[in-house]
Length: 165
Image (cartoon, rainbow, N blue to C red; front, top):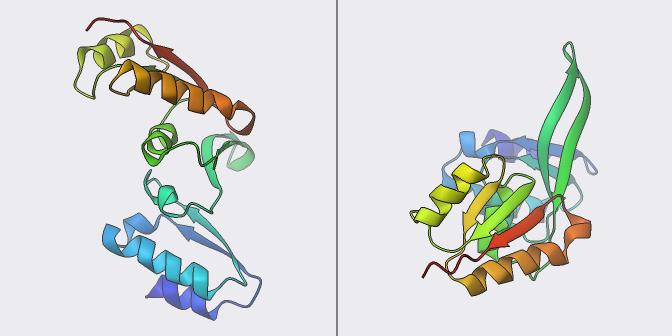
């Protein structure tokens, strides 16, 4: 109620910052509530801070920024490292979900979350996000999709098709 009340009573042109709605609202309420508030207050701007990797996927017209790090001088913030996730429609939702939780370098491999490929390559490349994509064709598609938009994001994508099947 507090979030809705603050948004609905804000003066026109206000920048509204909603901090981690997933900490205060049930998951089933967040997207419908935010959608209604965004629609009702189109005269305002919104920034939603979240740790929920799926929330940005529910608002395809929104820009998604990933805050990677923050540099402090004592208690004062000196700089932020932020990267924009591409809104390119050629990236499907499952790939966007993979990218939201990824490090700067990602390695797509064959197999599933429980496969040996993911475990082995995560040990070999500990500073890389290893993401299983199923078949060799899905690995190729994921690498191609990410590389096609390299000018719009922070990622360096690689793939390994090891032919072990």
